[in-house]
Image (cartoon, one colour):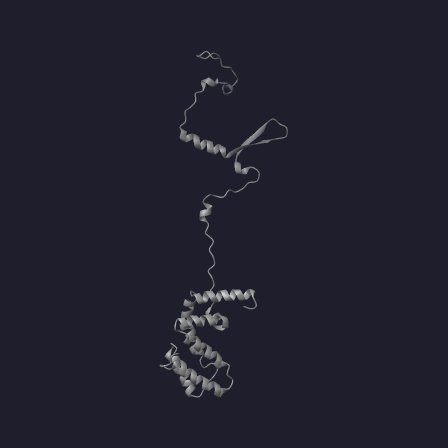
Length: 225
């Protein structure tokens, strides 16, 4: 066949087998914004061929580059932002009970209470502990009377701020001649839950508390100071 331009075209059985001269194909000027995505998509693709034996026929398929070798899951860039930052556990403070029952801790707590003009609450606690150790009833009764005078009298410098109803209950029991070991336990419980508990909250932010903790750590490693 001869076309109008004079270039020959080879005739085949099917029109789809015709070989068109390259100069007859006009290049299409594509906008630049369409070229960049195409390049990116091609860079992430890999052509993998699968052949059967020594046969020349082979089939091909397009897979993502991540499929090469072992398939690995690529973490998203935004995954790191979705993770919650690791939160440090809040520091556990030494409880009031542990402070009151250990002499080393009580010493620093007492120093802090003295600086806060509230040392009478700790002295009251110490006197109750001594009171409970007295086995003789007469001696214990005398100690109870002194404690009532020392901590419950209005003019006393060691007067504690606690429930007046509980104080009257202790005084009535002494007037009936009773001095049991648990005579002051209800009063001490009230002081612990109010006065000493409030002071403990302020104590944990003081320099006395920091020094106490350092001494406790030091004792873990050294037998003697």
